[in-house]
Amino acid sequence: MEYPEGPNFEFALMRVLFRPEAEDELVEAIDWYEVRSRGLGADLLRCIDACVERIIRQPESYPVVHRETRMAIVRRFPYLILYRITDEGISVIAVFHAKRDPKIWQVR
Image (cartoon, rainbow, N blue to C red; front, top):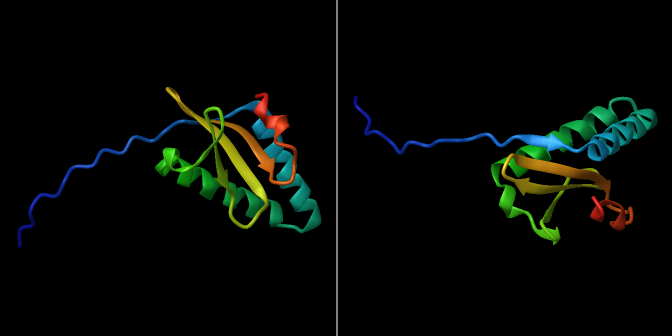
């Protein structure tokens, strides 16, 4: 049986770069959860990874919250991923607890 040729899709993976401050925040959060319950830090990392994957698939679907910075909400944990779309890809500027003062990341 022959099948008609379908559309050709080209997927370009976007490069994701975590700024040092964002990487430090992520490590600190993972450590905090891991101390409270073994394996919970790994769960947070999986949720962060899933959120980043959603951002990669549809980077412009998340709201702009400050200048050109967009925000994605991490499922299951009270964290936000704040990022900018650049010519080089996605620049994660903060992995931020939702209760913290947003002025901390707004100056980045």
